[in-house]
Each structure stands twice: as C-alpha cells, then as structure tokens.
Image (cartoon, rainbow, N blue to C red):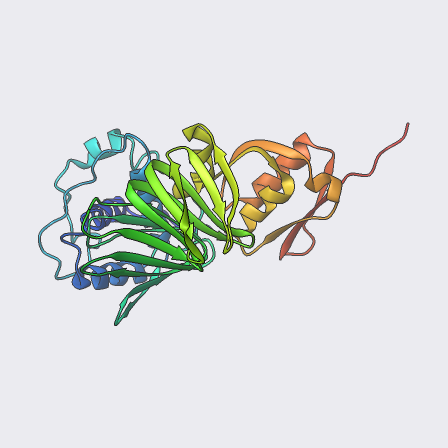
Length: 335
C-alpha cells in the first residue's frame, strides 16, 4: 500500500490566498481564474486542499485569510507567495489547523462563459464557493448545473439540477431571482438555498426573507423567513415547515463537507451519501430503510457511515461489489 506525501506548507498558504482572492468579487478577474486553474492543475491534491480551506472559511468565527498580493501574473506556487499574515499566527488561529475533512474530489467547478451569462457545473462530490460580480456569493453543491445572468435590471439564476446556497448582496434596483423549472424564489436581502428534487423545489432560508411562487400562478406567493423551509412544485405549495434555525443549518451541513442526520431514515441518509459518492449505498431491506438515525458524518465517507450502522443496529454490510455498499438486516441467531 502506498501513501501520498503531504502537501508542503507553502501550498496551504497559497490555498488560503486563493480563498481570500475569491472572497472579493470586485477584484476577481479572468486572469485570476486562469491562474487558479493552472495552480490546481499542477498537483491534483490541491483540489481537495482548496475545498478544505473554503469549508473552513465558511465556518462561524473563521478569520480572514492572508491578504492577496496585488500581482496576478502567475499562479501561486511553493515560492510564489509569501502571505501578508504571519504563517504561525494563521495556523494558531485554527483555520488551517482545523480544516474540515470534506473528502471531496475536486474543488473547481466548470465555468462556461455564455453570451447571456455564465454557466457553472459541479461534478459528483464537488462543492464550489463562487463570488459573483454584484457582491453575492454562491456555494454550489455536488452534481449541480446552473446559469447566472447579472443584468442591468435583474439578477437571475437558473438552476437546472442540484442545489446551491446564495448569500445575496442587497440591490433594490436589481431583484435576485432563482428559477428552477416553473418555481421562482426571490431574495429580499437574504441567504437561502434552492434544491431541485423529484417532487418539487425545496427552499431553505438561513437569513432574511424569500418570496416564492410558481410561474403558472404568480399571484399566489409565499414568504419564507429564516429557519423555515418550503417545497413548491409547478402547481402549488407542496409542504411548508416553520422551525428553529438549527434544523435548516443541519440540512445545509454540506457547505462544510458534512452530512448531519437528525432522526433521518436510513433511506434518506443513503440518498444523501449517494449524492456525493461513486460508490452507492443500497438499503436492501424496507424495514431497515425505515429505521431512523442520528449522527454527523463526512460526505465522502460512506464506508464509515456503514460501519457505524453495523455497530449500532442489527444489520450486516456487504462490500463484495466495489460499486456498492449493501446494507441488510442481520440474520437472527438462535440459542
């Protein structure tokens, strides 16, 4: 068994600098994007490192990464950047030292510049934090495709599949609207997520207020406030839940590379892990699938989740097929 050598400290510093640059959309340029892609391409391990730093940056209480240098002529490498902040102080603050172990393959979403906006596509297991030119920030979940058009009179996002969380910069003259099929969600100085599901579009609000409706009947509108969620389809409101902010934050734990299960059925838990991993979890027994479970897991660790189930429930794990993790009820033993 071979193991890869750890990345040098200079790479961690460079990743922190890239996060600082991306956090300031006013200065992020096409040259920055090209330099970032070149830096990532030089070592595949840097994809995961960048994602980890982004995840840590999202954690409450995270401090500002080192200031980005002015020059962007070349990609930062082992010797290209000396951060403005002291490296020891940066590590002592616990941001790089306490990175979230997301276990996600890749950190740079594909970005296609179109005549009427920009399209972003993330692969399975890939999460990306993207600053927009208006000061808003998107955090795009695994296996997601969306298009952004920041016009003179409106800011529009079209979510074709997947999920994204939006921190919306206030601009009364340009409404920020996310569309997924016929469902619309308009931010009113807020932070919220939109996820396209089979049964409709799920909207979770973490800050402020969101107004949602279906294009089929724009007169019927619902206001969703922080801590609430709504499920809307083409015809009507499917489900609405008013709750504390914490459950909404649990549902958005993926922003930090985690899955937070809180009374979740194993069927739903398996679906969540399968959103991020090539190796799929299969719950073979309907009764087992209906069992409820609590716990916090890394999104890239379906094996760890399965082993936890084995240790706490009467189930057995079959990993003979490298493509699946099969979970079924353990055979009863008689005495």
